[in-house]
Image (cartoon, rainbow, N blue to C red; front, side, top):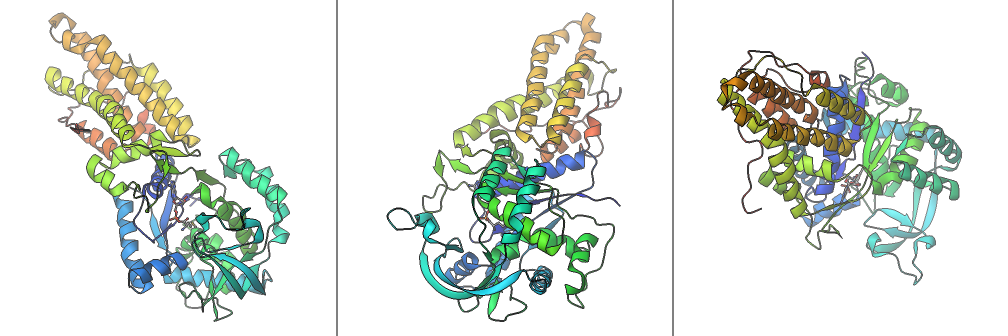
Length: 524
Ligand code: ME8
């Protein structure tokens, strides 16, 4: 068995209800996973929850619950969100899984024995909210710290540190030699600029248990727990390891505890990850610390860190205090999952920041989904049933050149993970074919018995295009794509791009009954 295409999302903190930014990231990652499946590549898609650390401990305390109980409740909400979003994830990791904890401890032991850590006192400032140490450099001109850091306290404590100095140059070389390692390009330049102009400070990888108890115990010092980011980043490799990925298990070697019950599975080759999809705020962790951790662990680096932008609502930062956070579940309940998936991938390219507006959402729903795609499918099928009792006429290739060109364009764009551009190209085809209906006017042809053959030609072109469209939209709108296939009375799922070649509908096949794909939302 060959290596699978392995794609991951950031794992979400379970310190509140899911918001649209987290949901967006999961959707674009799901589309990428489905694209690779549609291209016929064995694929593995991982998502999950980040459950340790100060933020979660504080939220659990505020809710009056023991952290584990609190996490169990919240993780159930996140798991169900994956279902609500229509994700095709192959697994769901929780950092409180005992298997993950065992792997973290094995890695920490290995790195400690190999001399990557040292213990030292620290005197300085600490952001409770971001769980980060701050220095004098982080002070603003007036001597205060940016409110984004939340409460900043003065700390004196001993901790364990990961030595960074020896890693800076090879990491710069790696990023320079691999132009696709960090995408988009402007993010790559930011990381390179940071690495070239700053000396990496050693990374503090512990917190004293006396101050923070909710974390994975440090295997070689019972007074400490593991820093939440060290624990969280490893999820990408621990899950493959737990499922028996030989590359990960070889790196863990003798450090894996006896009796862990993990069995090698040579058929499951996941590591290295092909893409880590993350938000712009956590690039440093993924493009600097994570590669260095992997190098120290003697594991190959991921092929790409793909950083998306952030959503605002009506041009303002979404925050619980302002109360303007878009709730993805409420949107899906009102509009349907595919409307949500469509809006977020169509509105925002992967990279820049985006702006959610309810009017923009409703506008795209009405114009592009209901009047564009939905109307085309509905009228094509309705006419075939009305004029031909649903029986597919003989093949005719009038739209073949347009459809074939669009399929080739979309296939290329999908390979590059240009999701927004793919949707634009698909909708260009939809518009073209809606025009074709207006130009050929099958409703007029139907009135003239002498035009019966021409009517058959037009109807074939229309329903065959509907079939191809189902295949093209499947990675983005899997539910709608499946419904188009069932309205066409086709067996199986439109989940392979190979099915997009022209001429798939056979003469004599009888299609089913059309039903509106995107019902009118009155009052919107
Ligand atoms: O950072 N728009 O978790 P998280 C777009 N647990 N994306 C957004 C967003 C917004 N408004 N707000 C958040 C964490 N995100 C860590 C990750 S990975 C080993 C550990 C994105 O719940 C954010 O950029 O704060 C991140 O990629 C993801 O949601 C989870 O954020």
